[in-house]
Amino acid sequence: MTIATTNRLQSLSAVSARKHIEPDEAVPGSLSRNPILPRELLSVAGLDLQLSEVQWEQLAREEMASITDAGIRFEALLMAGFAYELAYRSELLDPRVTYLLHELGEETRHSRLFLRLLEQLAPSARNPFTHGLVAKLDAFVTRRALHANALFIVFVLAGEEIPDLLQKRFSEHPDTDPFLAQVSRYHRAEEARHLAFARLLLPETWEKAGAVERFVVRHIAPMIVTGLFDSLVHPGVYETVGLPGWKTWQSVRRLPQHIELREQATRPICRALLEAGVFGTKKSEIPRSWQKLCGVGRRGSLGGDQRPRPGLPEILRRRFPQQDERPTLLPRPRLAAVPLRPASHSVQSAVTRSLLP
Ligand SMILES: [Fe+2]
Ligand SMILES: [Fe+2]
Image 1 (cartoon, rainbow, N blue to C red):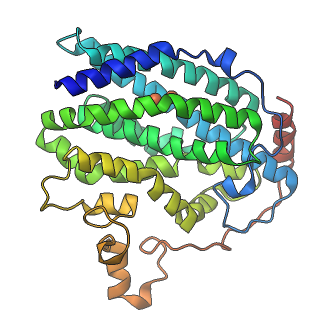
Image 2 (tube, protein in one colour):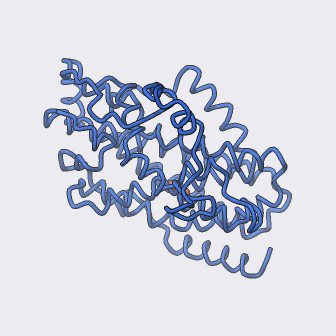
């Protein structure tokens, strides 16, 4: 470990020790505005949906609850991965260990605050990703990633960069509920240190990574990160206001705004990987899956001839233009394609429940 790394780790620990913030004291209060988020910050912005005021309010709460739920579970996995590292690493007398313990303490405080928020949101949506094949696949990948250090750090970066951008948008919009804006500001301030720590760990974990792990980081991880991003608001959320869950979710995934937000949120990860040497020497280029995830060119630039190389769906569309109606091969925004259904009675009662936490 270089002197610069040691100094940086010690300085991160010193800041964490100095800024021990108890959220129950620093972020008191509760939600007070309805809707809690403006329509333009919801995932469906751009779908031109015709919903009642009550449905918009319900949708905002359910979307926020879905994101908050995912945040708590991500922090639990982050703590599990770091705790495993602490339990089995050969040397405990290391500034990394001290900072890890600071980070674990901070994440438990964040999760307590998120739980308080979740309780007030009182969601009624059922998350389809928590059962069946998707849940099994998720558990399979997650268990392996927890013990693969470089891959784990890539997921840590994803799990921290993506919420950072979302919370930036929440906290900076004047129509966001004041308590929610405060939660977002508090969390972003603490996560800045966590991001710095993850970026610091990336080069050294990469150096120790084996061939399989390197392949997964370079080519498979971006697909998993896309799945993480897309599942932040799950299909069950849309069903709570009478929309067809999976159909709406698919339409949201194809929205240009959604894709742009994903690219913006994940570009810092790509930059961190480039700086850590994950994509190799100057002659090499960013793998196609990372180009697609982050909307960058082969050398990490935006626009011009450095745009991402076309993927299979685009190649097929060019090769067989008459078949470009196949939705599985050619995902395209179909903004008005979501059939609307009126909210059911059960939805209305869910709305009532959510308004009276
Ligand atoms: Fe956190
Ligand atoms: Fe964190």
